[in-house]
Length: 120
Ligand SMILES: [Zn+2]
Image (cartoon, rainbow, N blue to C red; front, side, top):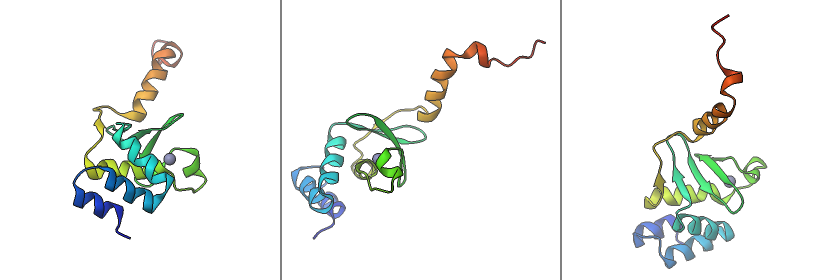
């Protein structure tokens, strides 16, 4: 079997042959990962790659993924999707922090209670 990333390099694009190669190597994971990349569901923030899944979105750092499957030591398709996205350049880039963005939104809601109390 030819390694799917080798096929990807040879084809130069994420076409059906490449998709088949990933399915041959990874099964359903391969299909999910390729489809997510093709559908623009892989996003690169300053700190993490983010993959939008069927029910939620997850952030990925190397082989770490924030989804439940990954926590149980199961190889999920999100990390694979990021590798494919990196190899093809098919991802959206956001010039912002993924993690900090969430924190900022929280802060907006509770700004009064968390304000530093310097005037006492
Ligand atoms: Zn995952």
